[in-house]
Length: 462
Image (cartoon, rainbow, N blue to C red; front, side):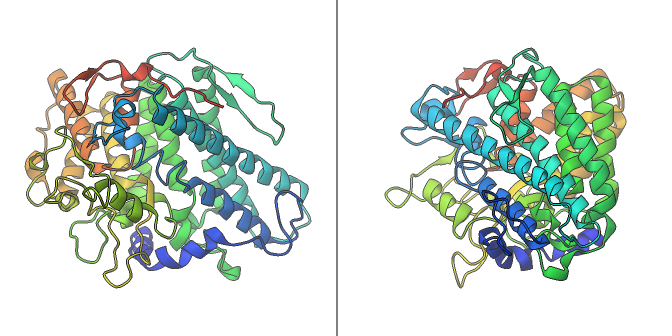
């Protein structure tokens, strides 16, 4: 219940929190000189890591709306993006996105390692009780989260080739890393996320309800933990990794983590568009505050008609009639066959002052992953029940599945989940990873077939 109260306030803090992600370190704290003499210096450094994540090279475009979302065949690409959209990563766009994201992800990992070393070195700095432990666990979890992002972008899916060794695990500030196979690295990531979650369960305000906000530090109170990789975000990230490994036992463990989020996190779905933005940001578990213009400007650039924009439209793979008439996600479609409204400004007065946030993990993914994890760990009735709960929350009771546990029903459930991934995460870059994990053959925007996408991997371009 407490989480519902916190998320209800999310829109009120979206604007004011942006300044924290642009803040300069206080008290002389800066990573290069390693002069960290108070808690605010550490907090500002943590904020700086998240600032980098919201850049255009990462979640501000390339890994979401402006890049990876095209790979899900959501859009009819404009000139220059056709090859990329059909998963030709040797194309100019493919090379650029791959180079930029690779460098930025490892840069963020370096920062996580740097601050972890600083925590170990600066033991004499005073912290509010529990705050140091929270930030150490958060940095450790974020490091694992970012390694998993590298793994699922730059390596084949676990199901397609778990012996590939494309990614280094980097745990310090020296350039050396440990090259691991996909299987080894997945094991490492799961172990790190699990360890981080154990610590966060004890110290994260989103769990304890105890705030560390005496210094008004972003990410130190229950309300604003959505802007950081919090306890529930860590559990969801671990579930993603477990499901990528994909044994029945893994699915069972993922099911336990995901139902814990559902049962304890208190996250609520948007049932009406009144009082919310169109991206439903109160459903976010982990998100990044957008830069000043951010997704609003990117959305306008993509979907506004030529010559004002690029004139990108939704592909034939998306049909508004797949959604029930009362499904609030229908508001994302407009008369020009675009999703321009989803990331539109939330203020009619000042276009950029209420820019929507960048979603990374949200409650809809938790429900859909939980439904799949249940079904694949010999809990098919529970999986169907979770999917049906999701459809009720989306005002689409007519799309519920019969609650019968048969082999055919498992196939129907996965087809229904797949369809929901098309719409639930429109513009967020999530569906591509779902399809890749399952090594699917997908239908491209032009009707052609792209086979075994689990074998696809971004090139490592330096």
